[in-house]
Image (tube, rainbow over all chains, first blue to last red; front, side, top):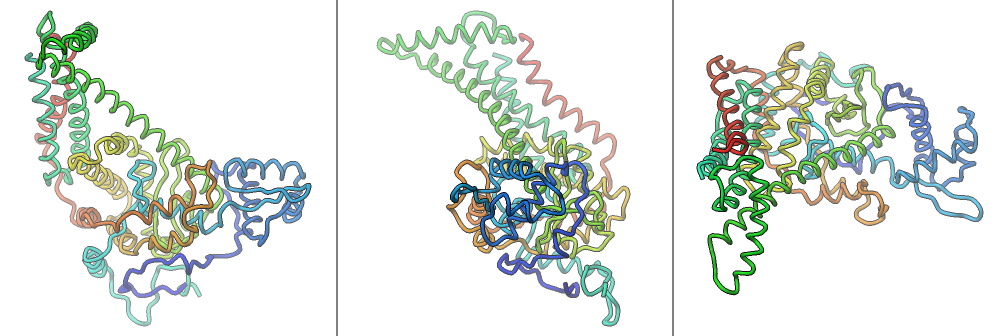
Length: 169
Length: 344
């Protein structure tokens, strides 16, 4: 991702242009302790499968996508049941089988997280503690001027120390 | 009657003190003392107002002129009888003073009930919100070596926050990972860890709860804003102990000026109202609809105040001032408590 110089203007991140960052999600190792017991990991894996599928899936189809895990059919069914009870998955009957699909897209849930994080829901409560509130308008311009005053000047040939994109090529 | 006057004075004095404290400039020199003072003002106001209303309502009934806690119960029983008596006497004779006294007693009971209720409701709502956060983070967040111990959510907008509680978490957005360099990221982590360790969420909770009942009051709003800012300053101080202040300041500036989510865009992404499970209390569509209704955030100078304080730290308060302010806070809380419990 190109990192512009420190004189860049703030822009509103338009959700319509969200691009999924980074490598394939399935390849990422998830190792943080308290969130990820075995059941949580399964829920996550199954949601990933459902999100990437274009159509609702049966339990059998979901199991097929998770072949590398060697899961019992009933385990997958139990986890899908849990997810349905939590409201993340919806199911409908199709003949004798149930078809499962995610209740909302992945982007929608990420947006919900981010809206709460950016303090834009109007909920004044002590549930989270945010790092910095977004400012705009004249205050933002004054603060950006302060930022530029703090930065050492970066010449045209030098690389910026930040950013995960072009600096590391 | 002395007790009632004392309580009434304290109640009014608390409101005046709140105005004074909100306008003062010394809090940024010692945020901890200022927070203690805000807490004392809030607690004293609650005790004094309920006590004054109850005391006035119960006064004039036969008996001692003081209150005392056991006396309140006896007087409440007598007041109930008085209520019945007033109703019976309405047809015959209008006793204004007695009616006012009964109303005052009722007001005291209602206020006490409201204060307890908002606290419980705030706790319940916080627990629910954190539960939702943890569920979503479990499904969506992942590790990143740049921010060990924190969770990363894939979104281009820059944000960082922590979810306090027994199973706490620090969350950084992918946009923030791109925006900040390694030193700044460490400053952000140190700041959030300071919030978690000091349980600042418990400090904020009563003030947020107060807004539920008194959201129309400018004083309550101001108290909330001030305490939130002071809590951030305390976390900044703690982070500054281990890391240079400069990185924290630049991180604040970058994240604050990076712009948030356009609510219209956010609403479009979550698909608008409707189509949500009726049983789920929170869902992307609900959150998006709420966000679309919120007016554009007005700037309140908090970010600038924090950055200035980091780059040019003000001198701490002299010890004498700290002792004096501590004494004021203690007096504010002790006086109404004494008036309530000790028959004067």
